[in-house]
Length: 277
Image (cartoon, rainbow, N blue to C red):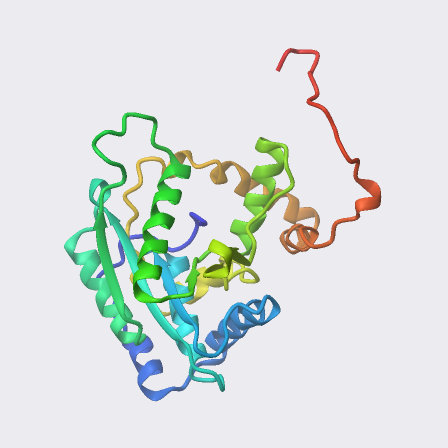
């Protein structure tokens, strides 16, 4: 997920406005717009239906905190009922502090979403390979899928937003030589479980605004590789493209479902460059 946004480690933030919103049920217009944008993504891809059990994967970053808030608030407006709970996989090798845990517990209590933190090891003692972002994400998903099965959840929600999806599309094009992206809704295990990404239409800037205005308790992610993530290379490239067309992100996102097959070849062999690269 995106790395930009408010300063991390704001665990001493007060939740006065958030608690007032939840207690009175009066959603300010700017927050309602955010929730409705989330809702458009959910409805467009038929993500959530009556009786669904949604398990939100929580990192402690701005994206997953905003996602959980939107899913909780949205339940108040809809004629359907669904269950939401939040799960944080806490890697022992890079564990959150006690104050961070306390802030997350208070936050999820405020938004009326049950929260569980599960301490786990990133890899078994027998592992001697090179651990990277891909393995970390895969192992975290494995834990979340196991918890979903144990608790009867049929949906696992991730906080990937529009920028994440665009960056993933470009990563696959530039570094893997394939046209692939993050699907807003993805079926797994013969339909027994689905991954959903309700923030698929939401920009990172919108999430930052919500996070800052409500002083959400964004915690510091103790990842030793976070500064080496290839997304940090792509973000300034996308910003430069947006100078020429402000809708670059929306167009890249739309292109994943707007493929003109008449102008695509069926097969291309690997191209060897003259400089030997």
